[in-house]
Image 1: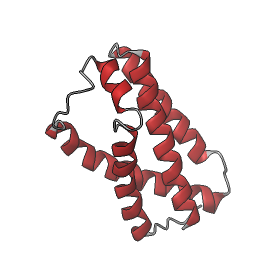
Image 2 (image 1 turned 90 degrees about the horizontal axis):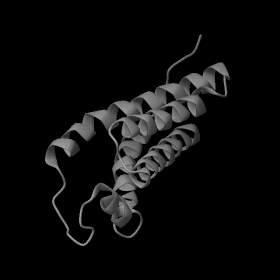
Image 3 (image 1 turned 90 degrees about the vertical axis):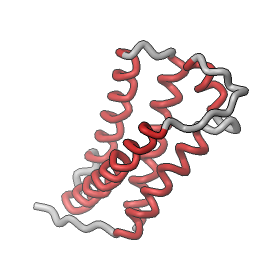
Length: 130
């Protein structure tokens, strides 16, 4: 049996942090140029973000952050250490598999999978800390 506790301030910080990490990860300063080139988009052109994709990202990220908080709570109360690392591994694997099916280039797949793994690990660590 476990007790579910979530710090809602930490939840909000993690939710915002996911978008900050994504913005940095895909910025031209980090991996944005390689990502755009891998998609066949001219990296020198600055275009608007796809509004539908960004709108869908909000509820998806909200649920994902909540679920990671739930898993961290479960892991802490049950002392089953592998719950969150297994979830991060599964989500990263799903990201890779889904993109291979959509015939993305390996550079795009690795950049996206890396962002998934890094973001989810940071979110989990922040939940553990608070």
